[in-house]
Amino acid sequence: MTGGAGFIGSNFVHHVLERTDDSVVVLDKLTYAGNMASLTDLPAQRFRFVKGDICDRELVDSLVAKADAVVHFAAESHNDNSLNNPEPFIQTNLYGTFSLLEAVRRHDVRYHHISTDEVYGDLELDDPAKFTPERAYNPSSPYSSSKAGSDLLVRAWVRSFGVRATISNCSNNYGPRQHVEKFIPRQITNVIDGIRPKLYGAGLNIRDWIHVDDHNAAVLTILEKGRIGETYLIGADGEVDNKTVIEKILQAMGQPADAYDHVNDRPGHDLRYAIDATKLRDELGWRPHYTDFDAGLAATIEWYRTNESWWRPQKAVVEAKYAAQGQ
Ligand code: NAD
Ligand code: TDX
Image 1 (cartoon, rainbow, N blue to C red):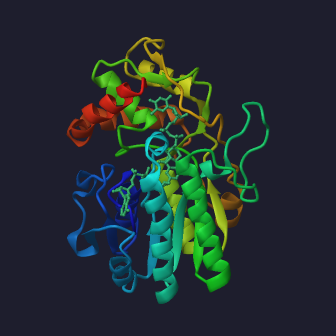
Image 2 (cartoon, helix red, strand yellow):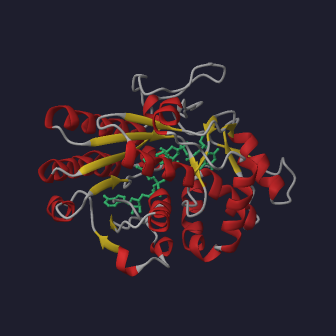
């Protein structure tokens, strides 16, 4: 698998090693987003870490040659970074996916591609529709367009070369080991540090939150039972607007619900995402386990409180970057 030192990938490593007898090899470049502290206490005989770039065709080819399946999590993943400097997004998300696809094609290895609901663009706040696998792609940011392009590469390699691939597009994840640049960990660690949470614009934007373990359980299900060539949308009916999320965090951490600042909005900021996961539920029988967002949030707050050494080294750099752009 790729990207195993990142947020979702590291949780996937723990998930797979705890729930199956499989062995896992992680290929990860250890960018600013990779953290080896996320990969401790793992069974040494079933886990191997390789530091390297998914764009390194030779390295990728040699690892894929020995794999039964490839699950591709590695990406440049943060929208705000993609607005400041799109280049690594094009390189990693597009060329990196191409590099993996060529290797799985050559060695006929099963491939699962991790993607995002952001490829569909956004919905109006009052639109009764949700995203379905048939919806046309309409991405807004350099990040989401690079992910959309990578999905299309996968579809073409399935159709033209018979690559045995599946794709999943998931909504916003939360849970342990998420980088402090992202919305929920940023606000939790702000409150711990006595900094007021920062809400972009009016904060009416809606995200469809899912716990990272529910995402990873779905990925494992698709890897084992998914139909080749198919796209599955992963979501747990968790729509909440950003303002409400900040208020919930403040209240859960014993602060007044209005003790936050409005800051500059994100250019091109998507208004609302919402996933219809009927296909995944009906075809593959997947169900989310974490259906109580407040409880999941409380557990996540507790994780950041007790794992300060995990996030502390990144915090000041991230806040300085945001401050420089009025966020
Ligand atoms: P992350 O930024 O926390 O982790 C990304 C990992 O990929 C890091 O360990 C990094 O070192 C590694 N990486 C980056 N470039 C690399 C390269 N060129 N070669 C090898 N490794 C490289 O990301 P995340 O939030 O865990 O997201 C993982 C995947 O899930 C991404 O594909 C993302 O698009 C997708 N996704 C994320 C969310 C979410 O809410 N975070 C939702 C839906 C889909
Ligand atoms: O400080 C903040 N204040 C704020 O209001 C930050 C960092 C974000 N926001 C808003 C922007 C979004 O509407 O919160 C929402 C969530 O922001 P992010 O955590 O940056 O996530 P988002 O842009 O929605 O993208 C996430 O979900 C889809 C992941 O980062 C992507 O990798 C994934 O594809």
